[in-house]
Structure formats: C-alpha cells, structure tokens
Image 1 (tube, one colour):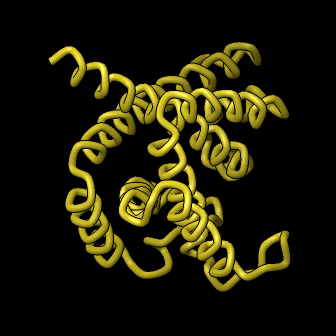
Image 2: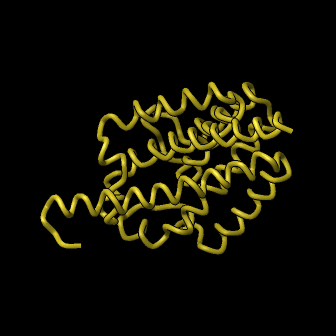
Length: 206
C-alpha cells in the first residue's frame, strides 16, 4: 500500500512542478496582457529570471517522472498553439507544423496513449482557463479559443477532451486536476499579494 501512495505522491509532485513551470512560462509570454487586466504575476516580479526558474522546475519534474512530465509539457506546447494553428511562428513554420512535430515527438518519447492523454488533459486545463478569462482577455485584446468559436462550443470541446483524458488515463487525470486546482489557488493568492504590495509601495490605500 505504501508503494501505491509513493507512486501517487511522485505523480502529484511531478504535476505540480511541471504545472508551475508551464504557468511561469505562460505568464512570461502574457505579462503585458496581464498588467493591462490589473494582474501582476510572478513573471512580472521575476522579470528575466522567470524562464530560468521555470526550467529548473521542469528539470526536477522530469527527474521525478519523465513520461508524465514530457507528456504534460508537449501537450501544453501543442494545445497552446491550437487557437492560432494557421499563423506563422518565429521559426517561420505555421503553427500546425509545430503542433504536429510536438505530438510526434511526444508519442516517440512516451508512447501514443500517454501523448494523447497529455494533449487531452492540457486542452481541458487551457480551454477552461479560456472560458473563465473570456471577458478579461477580450478587454486586453488577447484572443482565446472561447472568443474565437464561442463560450458554449468551447465548453463542449472541453468536455470531449476530459472524456478522452479519463479514458486514456483516469488516475493521472485526477492527479493533474488536483495539481491544477492547487496551482490556480496559489497563483491567485500570489497575484493579489503582489498587486497589493505594489500599491503599498506607491503609497496607495487598498
């Protein structure tokens, strides 16, 4: 029984670390949009150190469970480009080419089933975030999936992705959802603390 709990603890630790790394990288990319929405994230506080810190977290996650960490990372990488799948990237390749490369690389490293699970669970996380942030993203000029195809349609796609994730690996799906919930709470508390601290430094009563 202790072996089972140890395995679940490793999964949760890996999911938390890789989720935090992905969150830091995402916040680094969206730092200007977040500031326009009145959100001061750790990426704004850490500045250029954000990506090195994210890399450290990702390396530790890979050490804990390589297959889980890689499937989540490449799943997030692919899903992050779904909304703009036809747009060119800095690599001068269309987004859909890099999506295909990410999925192929993930499948070759962790197997097709875990690669599919990684894409599905990260789609659930990303699209739920799009639904929740629809109003704020629209105000800051950031276009997400819900803004492009509609609120109800995005929720339907999220449910489909959740079904795929559960069918391919129910245990890891539960672990990742717990990790995402914990990271979301931590991110919200951090954002409020940083914004309040910034206002206090400027002498603004909050």
